[in-house]
Amino acid sequence: MHLDVLVEIHAAGLNPVDTYIREKKFGYDPKLPVVLGGEAAGKIVKLGKEAEKKYKVNDHVICSLHAPNYGGYAEYVACDVTDLIPLTHNLSFSQGAAVYVPYFTAYKALIARCKIQPKELVMVHGASGGVGVAAVQIAKANGAVVAVSAGSEAGLKLLNDLGADVIVDHREDGHLQKALAKAGRPGFDVIFENRADLNLGSDLAALGVGGRIAIVGSRGPVEVDPRNFIRTEGSVLGVNFFKITKEEFVEFSSALVAGMEKGWLKPVVGKEYSMEEIQKAHSDLIKAHGAYGKMVLKIR
Image (tube, rainbow, N blue to C red; front, top):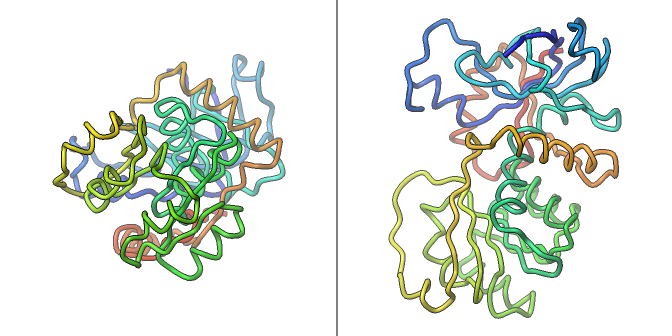
């Protein structure tokens, strides 16, 4: 790796994994000092000769930052040119800080793993958060019929504004069956699941024949009825953001930059925090309910 680009950071994405690393619950014990932050957005202030072939000073970029150094919670970060994604000028730096983790996760789940097809019915749980918004926009851009759930009035309104085809309140009992009834379908073709510990059992019961469930998150074990696998011949697919290959990074980047240029990729920024508010930000990441957009650390 050659750290041949210096980026002036304007905003950094806040992710639950940041809190896991801080609490040493992420499978390794980071050597202190550690600057957290796996994604950031800013502008290039200095670059080496190889990097000059692709970028120039003042270009707006998204930084994908990795263990063990990370570095997003800072004023500047040194990056390898291959870890940068162009940020189009129709998006703000705060929106840029909401692209890498949410959209790459959703793209891997829906496109690479589930291979969604036009007119398939896709259910996105908790769709008003950063990753959920990304999943909705990617599914819509690929011609799917998109059903969504949220647990707050603000979140439900946001999903309506995003153009979701079917909207249900997951605070209500039987919300998956209500979504199917509204869609006029017997089962979901694809379910995007970020809390498998809460929903996997009911997901399987609502899955259509040949359906796929993409698990992007869970906070504990869950009990399911294996007969639903037999009934549907369905699949449950694990999605690990940290297993994205170099080839996938290039593929996903190209598709998502095209989405920025076409205008369908529009991250929704929720609450923004200053560096002085980072403790509250980490608390909100885990404890806050009724997600609305992506939480962002505002550097400048």
